[in-house]
Image (cartoon, rainbow, N blue to C red; front, side, top):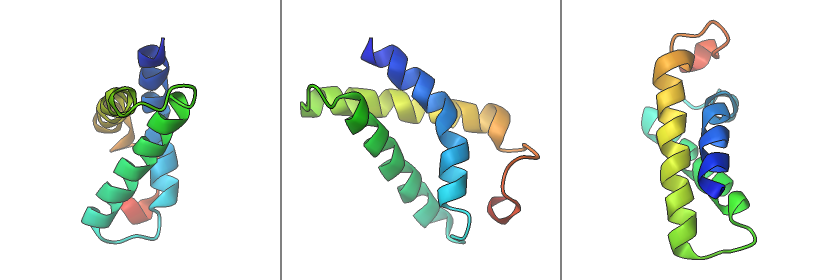
Length: 85
């Protein structure tokens, strides 16, 4: 069940990360902000069971689906912040 939730949330992560990193010019810093955001999502998914194993499994799923969504749809989207292109 948490894998499905992680996958669905991963699909909606790119717009939120784009908003968070709107004023950050360094791509390295934007990368780490996105990883930390995904980690936060993974922790929220596993609030009832805060085991490291479950959190990292959810983190992997969230990052995978977020990257897939970003590369497929969000990277060249007109909705994407011009500062991050």
